[in-house]
Image (cartoon, helix red, strand yellow):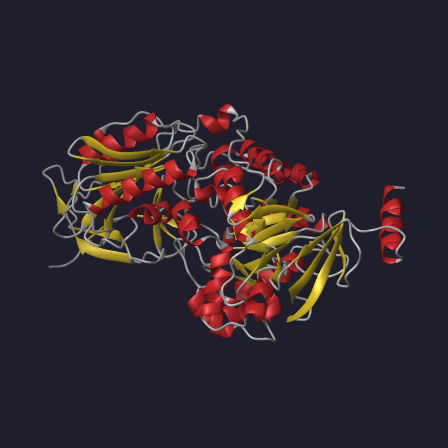
Length: 583
């Protein structure tokens, strides 16, 4: 009867028997359905848009000629990478006109398993921001590292009953897709529940794309160049153009966008840090950059609203039209999107950059598995050595500033009297260590890194995609151990050490990934970290923390380090770091 009564009310409003709750007059509607801007009014009742004609309403607002656009959607984000809780993200995103995020809790799931997913769902339930969840498909990301959990198809299937869950998140383990029955079961479960399946195809060949598309893996945000974007679009794979803190693909991919293919393209941030959010925003910044690069503003807005809504089968969202949800924002300049007033379900929830109903003060009870997540075995100095024996060279991870692809670099390296690798500031060769921190296995991976530009000290963190083991880089063992031990003491976070002293540290007490600290305090501590790290970096524009977070991710080429050792990403094999160069 509730549905009948609702429909009767709509009919009675349109026939003049009763008045709607609200009418906003004199606005310019950004119509994503027809990709045009036209004048009109918005008739709103019980969270829905009922029409464009001006009706007598219980409340009438003069829109003063402002533009009205649907609330923006970030098509793919890892909230954990912001280091902020969903409640803080709510207060940052909503005032910017971002009304929905499609979140993949892959990071916290790799640390805490089902408890991590449930924690994020519990947080999302406290927010006005519409946080939708994709279930992590690859925990661990590959078999070449140890994560805090292993999530099989039976572990994630019950979450499909939750109304916030939209589908299966980024399928990144190509070998599992090719060969593992349980990955096929995960894909089967998603399809049987009529849910979307996300891709993650950084190493896909065209033949691999055929496999993904045939399995109905419907999107990909790992697209770095125009030819690969075209190959995906031709196969019906929606491309999410990514502008995050580490990887920025907009300028490279935007020239491919046209009126004929734009319906297959969305925007996302993927991994974005809190200082970037505070400075420039989230997916709203991507929309503005696209406009600055020459994309039609209405098309840019459509790619951040209607496109993701339709892709994720969110009926009645992504457009301003009768029957759609009354989720929109008002703004002044079509060439620079800056939300003035934000409406959700027909009520104003933010204005002038401030939320009307702040959520940042809400603290969700944190399960012990989420709170106490740093559990690594004891180790000795001998355990973090790289024995070269009689060999004179090493296969090193080569750093390319501004990207996360790390080629294999072979170079002669120094060693001590025990034939152990010795870092060299002069040669720009540093030592990298990954320590398993979830199950006290004692696994430790060690290798050399070329081009990090560290002139002293060490940096350690628990933010290391995707398994988030402890990762540390340094010029000497003493500082490396100092940094690691402070990370353990803090139950996660970032640390900088030098000359046996802790210069700066940031505590991330939620799974070693996020914090309940206020945003202002978090940004202050991050600024201190960057300042202190700058003392020991040759390249002052290089972000060592972002690079550390990706240097152990064994699904992005060419070689990476995990707790199992040095990984050849293309062959998915552990390789020997020791080699020879004939002199």
